[in-house]
Length: 161
Image 1 (cartoon, rainbow, N blue to C red):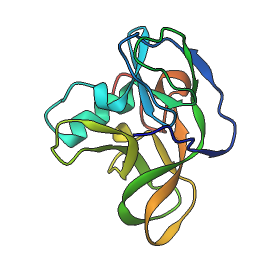
Image 2: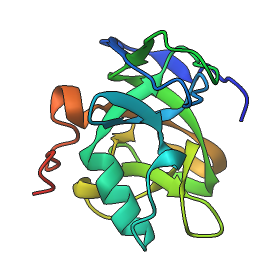
Image 3: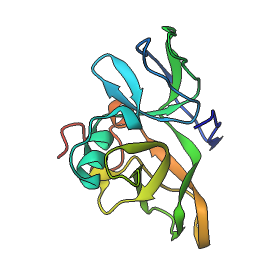
């Protein structure tokens, strides 16, 4: 996916995160913390089900990429840990406060870097809907909360409890 600035408003509380030279990050990617480096959602190993993938991602959710990192780059990038971002989603309606997590690809074996979906519990969530979508739409405003930096969405913790 091409670089897409998804930030719309609110404090981003950015951090500067290391990226491995072989990792490619696009602006707008959902990122997770892998020990000492950040990686896009699609690079997380498949956990066997969408909910297992979403839960592991939520447990390690760092934020949204505000800078890109090309293959071979070793310069750390700025990552927003909070704020309201507009993400692509499957056509649907959304109510304020609905829980939102990373969406899975159609093959069911990886998460998508810049697409979200409604989730059933906070342990799968990376944020909440920030603007009601009453008529089916293919994008949604999400108030994101980094689990790594802010403790995540209420009810979510790095330990998965």
